[in-house]
Image 1: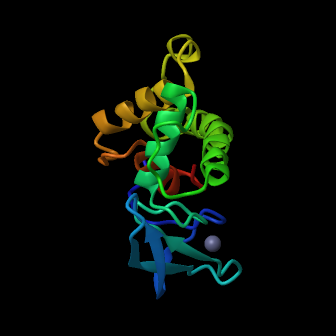
Image 2: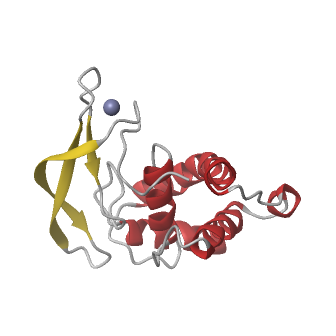
Length: 172
Ligand SMILES: [Zn+2]
């Protein structure tokens, strides 16, 4: 099992802190919160890639907080629409989040299964997982990681992003 140290997703080299930058995340009430993001640099000279280390409540390339996005996606999946959403984002934006979750969620589920097997030697029951809807499937997989003490985060998307950025590359 690999340690929790931060490694370059391109080459597996060690990452060191390079700089910090600021960005905003928008909360559900529309409040723009300023946060500090750590940027790391791969020490391998042939690589030298920089990677931003995002807190769990920030989704890459998204202005809204992960919690806001998750709430919209989950309620969309449960009620089949955006009727009861009080999110300040535009409908088009929220539909985009849901679509992206569908696409990336499936890839994430496969990656989570692979990490469980490669890193922890655990085989998630495919038969059990196949019958479940995407969100349930992701929840079952994240619970496995929680049992292994590999992640502890109240948000589903946040947990997935933590696991994927630690043991694999990418994010949901
Ligand atoms: Zn690298």
